[in-house]
Amino acid sequence: MQTIQKAHPVLLTLVKIQRKYAKNYSWPSQLKILELMDLRQGIKRSKATLNRWLRVVEDDKYLLRRTRLKRDPLRGLMFKSSLYKITIKGYRLLARFGVDMSKEIAAYETWLEEISPDRKAARTKKMLKEVEGHPQTLGGFFQNLGYIDGAKLD
Image (cartoon, rainbow, N blue to C red; front, side, top):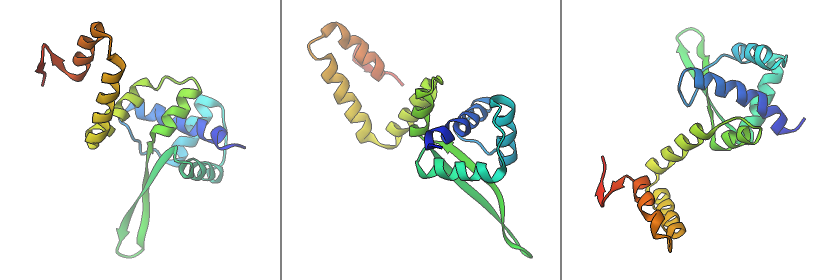
């Protein structure tokens, strides 16, 4: 089975959980993921199969998975839960399967621009090049950047 075929049901389940709670990450248990895959998509798999699929999807960078551990004085380190965050590559894969991911992709792009000023400068340069020679679209360009009549909006 190809990676894309393994990624689709897992990513679709995780994105639905993220949308339900209006977050760009989720903390579902493996049993909850299996339950939702069975209920919503009719896919029954074992916990071991889910873990293999999650590893493959994570290795191909469609998903970030962070494990939380807690320290117990008697037992030492104990597994607590896992955080799942779909990457931009995962969102684009879901979009290829026909899932509307426009809001998630736009939010991801905005976040990337916030943490990387070079990315925002490159986007601005690209937009200026596109509207070059088209003065009628220049006003819309500045509105997209947050300017109206030369004044920056806050």
